[in-house]
Image (tube, rainbow, N blue to C red):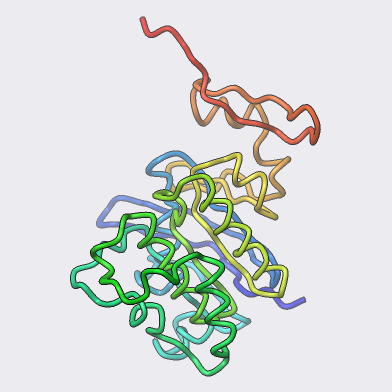
Length: 253
């Protein structure tokens, strides 16, 4: 199987400050990969490098066995779609215009209508984007990402403003697209969601890669307590035996 993305010895600096150091992993078609880690770990920076939005200081990013920087912007958009963390609208464009931005002929009108229906955004297609709630806006931008119909989807905390029902809806839709052969990398803070939906997890801390493996091998009790300084509890689920990660109530002295 030819990997969708291969990252080798990736480094990124902001001035003299290293934000990413020695990142190495590969993503295969059909995989949903979660990028996890504490605040400031480098998750957003990594996704910006992979999208081509910023240029690494050194290292290689290969997109379907070709260097990422060898693609034109238009070529890259055919293979990669990117949903940034903050998509605050500057203008009141209509929702129906936003979701069709970047629409390619490789997706049918029926498929577009299915995406709109699945994400429950039909009722506000004719409304300006800046009149929607944060969660509604996020579902609109996710619809636009899906309609771009690229082989690899990069998403930076797409569920941060969603209620638990729509978080589950979005992740199930994304997982279904991966099962059909696409790849996705998603920066995510909810570790229970990451365990439930992701095939593999990339764990970052202070810009360094700590682990890249299946969730059960990455989210061990020891690893989580080291990262979050014993502010969480890790217990097995009584029926599935998958780990559950919960905040721990401690007395502050």
